Length: 129
Image 1 (cartoon, helix red, strand yellow):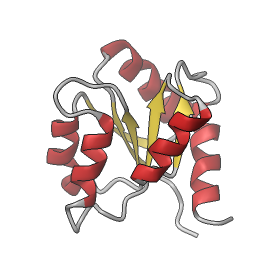
Image 2: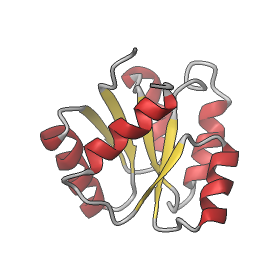
Image 3: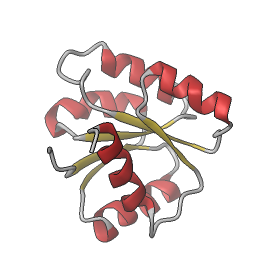
């Protein structure tokens, strides 16, 4: 089993980024790289080599689904699992995100105290454990 250690979190909202960083690094013990845009994520993902990317859906310019599509077109990044973070979690919306290639969808607003556990559970399901 590959242990989940490095998470890239892509979110354009500074307050949410700050809370997620605390939740994932301080509470969860993950190594976290924050990105404020899809473009920044695409620029830094190769160097950081995250185990998992958490991707906000609604972002200016390059939104979450477009960022995921761009990641999938890069052979070095195509295999990295991606979960979307969004307030839009109707079953039809979740299905649409999964159809794009997301391994799961995390509802916003999230609970900072349980976010790391949620992410670990998604990781383990994805790994078939």
